[in-house]
Structure formats: structure tokens, C-alpha cells
Amino acid sequence: MRKLYRFPKIILCFITVLSVVFCACTNRNSEDGKAVCSEHDSAASASSEERIEEKAENVQAQWDDPDERYESICSEETESVFPETMKDLTDWYGDYQFVGYVRPHRNYTPCPDHGQLEYRISLQKEEIVSLTPGLVYRYSGVDRKYQSEIFADYQYEHLIQDSRPVLTASVLNEEILEEMNRRWGKESDEDGDFVNFADWSMGDEKYFADIDFKLSDHIGCPLLTFRYPEHPSTVKDQEFWVYAGNGIIYSLTDVMVSEWRRLR
Image (cartoon, rainbow, N blue to C red):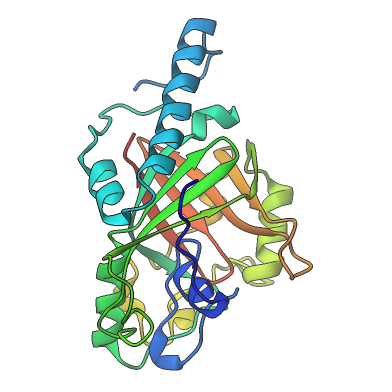
């Protein structure tokens, strides 16, 4: 039986930010190819499923050493060509790495200590998320600089966590966009003018790659919804991924938009 490195819930809540690392200095933990547009032929689908299942088995086999598994997944060959659309759930299965913050949502909490924020962003750039049938694996670095007491007895430099969200593949439409706007702040005011998203960063503007990013520009793009039925909040859809093409993914949570790139 594989060992599962579990930590107190408060630690997991801090580490698993679903693509966003909250600033610890606020003393708050976060609880929360070518286009593959046509149907895959049966032979290709079977080969893809076998590869995904094999990868999941390898994760379980190497779970006893998170560092070994992390280095293994980093050393795998990356893809150079990605689908232009991902209409089926199986198209989404693969590995993704964090790139950086894009712009905040209204729930973003600023960090007065920019040195600490820069450190946490650099640490998060090590993060890899693997989507497999039934399980989502998250590989992340251990924060020994600002969380040294928490990880004093932990012998590895990386963590592997798994979760079981219900993943749903669809397309971003006006109705979904309106729901996101209600939850995270509208992109435009009553006059139709776009809001100043820099105001939401509250001093951290330079840490966002595209402060004027508009989700409305991505209507019609493939959308992946992460739903957690057991989440204590009444809102079960906790994260959305929008596929912008060429291996670029935008992750949207109630805190911010972040960019991820598909590795394979």
C-alpha cells in the first residue's frame, strides 16, 4: 500500500491554493499540434488511455519519495505541439506547470512584504499539476524559508497531494462568464467601461503579467470546471481552466487569474 504524506488540515489548506499562493505574511491560510478538433480514432484513444493509466501507476509506485517522483516528472519529454481545442475530458489529461500571476480578482489579498511575495511566486513556479482519470495530483515545493517550523520534521523538498474533483469539459459562454463576474467582480461598469483591475492588486500590480486581462476575450474557448462536492462552501465549483491554445491555460479562482503551460 502506498504511503500518503498527510499534514494537518491547516497546512494543506495553505499549500493547496489551486493555482494561487496566498501571502503568508498576512497570517492567513487559504482554505479555502495541430488542432485536435475532430474525434480521436479508437487506436489513438486506446494508446492515450494506456499512457495515462501507466503514469498514474508510476505516481503510486514512487509515492514513498516525493522528490524522486518530482524529478521524474520534470525529466519527461515535453510536447511541442498542442491541440487548438479540447472538447473532450480526455483531451485535458496531462501535466501543467505554473507560469505566473496574470491579474487579480477582487478577493486578492495584497502582501506588504514584497520580498516574501517574490519568494513564494518563485516557489510556486516549481508547481506541477497532473490531471488523470479520477485523481488530480499536485506537486509542489516545500517552503523551508517561511514555514520552517511546520516542515521541520519533513525530510523531502517536495510534496505530492491528490484530490478528487469532478472535472467537466465544456465551452466558456456568456452565461458562465456572467456567473464568474457575479462571484469575482465584473469586468465592466454600468456604463460598459472596463474596470481598472490594477485597483484590485492594491500595490502588487508589478507581479501580474497582464493586469488588463479580460475573460470576455476568451468566449468560445474550451473550459474545464473543477467541482468539489465535499467542499464546505455552498459554491462547489472552485476553479476554472480556460484553454487559450498552444498549450496555454488560464486558471481562474476567486482570488486571481494565473497562467499555466501544458508540459505534455
